[in-house]
Length: 375
Picture 1 (cartoon, rainbow, N blue to C red):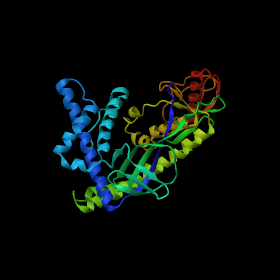
Picture 2 (tube, rainbow, N blue to C red):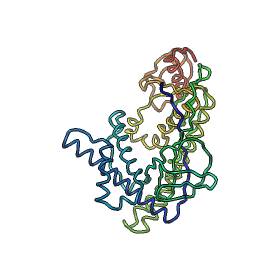
Picture 3 (cartoon, one colour):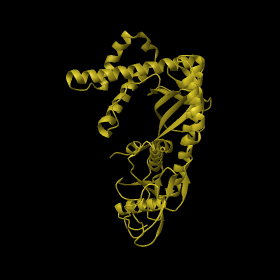
């Protein structure tokens, strides 16, 4: 019998020395090279033989690759093998989840990273992490954990900040799903004007971090475009721009963590509507606002926190008319357009707030799917 174990990821800031930064840069370059090489081998093998080469066969070719490129020996061998595993996972997502064909990694990506599968230790007392080939690296621990250390990911941002994400198996089983009822379930309708509207009538305002910073972003983007390509001044301008993007991302992430934790702690089940975000992004009038809201990352946070605390995430199909359907009598008002925020049901004369009505319907549909009738 398979028992699900609880895995949690912890992310900490690192402060490497100048020598360690050089080693990290070399390891990032080596892992990127191996990933691109492995992807090229997979493509060539499929074109020539009509089948894919496994990561085990790729790992057998790594010693020969190191002979051809001596500088690969300076890095951690396990990290290089970890890149073939990452590539295999990317192909699995491509075939099973239709996530898109794996791309070659570029040195211009804003975040560069490499895996550390094992052979690293964490010392909370000395505030350090001991890494292969680098020794002890100073770290800032905002919390402690206990459990078996799994794969770690060391990352470097474009603003030259270093982080380590550590996956930990604490040995505990995932809690059983708690029972829920109509009274302990909340429907959530995500949107642009309000980030989330609850079936209880509560509205959570959308902070719109990107929109509020757009004026400053445009100034910094113009400064980058006016600088000579390849000059140090252009790099400084790009750094200022990246710092602002990083701050926006951190603000959005913090907001979503607080809201998702609040919803999980206050309810036994959360009802959500399945959204076709990629399709919605094709609407150029709304694309920026939808990207600013980042609904997908919010739902991801809800899902893994629900697993941690034994809560339930309920889903309804994207084609159910949650917005246009009266939650009282069931009348389908097909004439409602996107600009209509309030409407009155022609049948029962109930006045509706568009978003609150949608949240109530989302909850209602999800409970009906669970054979829990009523709200």
